[in-house]
Image (cartoon, rainbow, N blue to C red; front, top):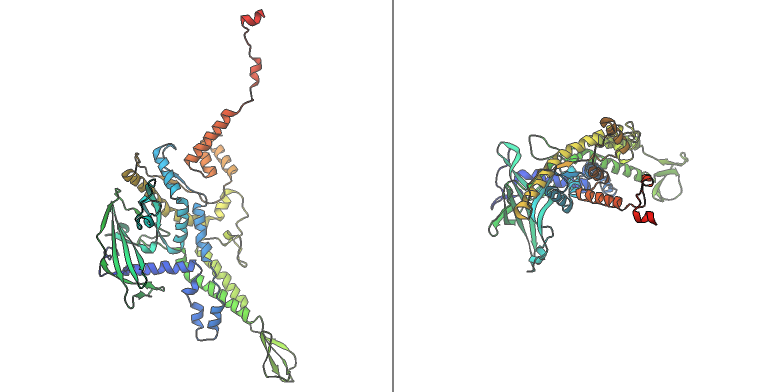
Length: 513
């Protein structure tokens, strides 16, 4: 199936029908990640809705947010050690200097981490390259003020909200986009009214078409088909004329990064999507265990008659008098099968981490007796540590594959924009990204292996060594080397012993004296 219908024109529905399921999934998984599953899921309370327990379960609701660390850890390993962005040329070339500038000015490592984290629950992330001001000056221009004279336009890399992106796939290839639409709803609020408008960026190779439409709401304009309410609008009328902008780049400037993908659809799949039912079951089990413990923390007591009413309140519990033949006091307890409940809870949590390809001990502890796999701290050499981390490392490597291609394309397009609209004067290069695995390295072990393989010959230059050891870029590494050379030149007060063996020729005047 290919999505090639232009749904962004008057009379059409927004969001398009083929995007509602995807948008509902994004927003539902966001609630799950935020620990607000009680706003979406009512599994336990729905089962007991006709009993007195329903209200009590809601009162004792506990959000067990296992989703947060499950999607955060791969992002940490992806850029916990910052990757190195390399042009493939020497450090002092214009291309490498430009790439370093794009990475630094756009906080690219932080952008990758945020994208990978959100990608874990959504399944799709998008980044956009544009030529413009880094600071938003719309507050100035709307008041008739001038943009500061020293403000400069530059290539900018930024996130795009996934639920605002609507790609149009190529005929016969669902994995290729012939155009990408970024459409977002803007509400204009006045004293007596709220009016929705639709801002549309239609990205084509070499061009961007900006359009604005007025939206209208209508009765029944909510779709609840996929477990989350998505508001629907009708595109009423176009506001103004289309603005056509030439980018000067023969490529799309919007880049898709799926979390996990297949060859029959462009949409990605996030980790929480496959864990949804298990995470909700974990949450319900914890709530019900807490309810059982709360209910029976002060049990009902029975014993001899006291001469009062038939049921006596004693503290928070109840006292029930019995006949004189049954004088021994006691407590009415209920076997809540707590041992089985806790066992099921441990099993569910273990399944969640297993399906997420994340060892449970990666977080420093293991729930219950599920530590047959060890704690992950019993090995010290690099190969053993990597073997223990293999499930999460292979997952991060899969995620890295998608980010590597999109980021390299984006950095290449940054160069093209800089050449087309800025002062850059160089031939663009397709960069290379050297990723780290996020695990601690045994430097001594690595040095010994290199020495054995090369016969104790140098295997790395000083600049590269500094870049890798200190996690700095080329400019910073060169500055460190310059300082080292300066310190060496300033060293004084040391001489070699050979100077005392050198013969000094006496001049004629010295000999006569």
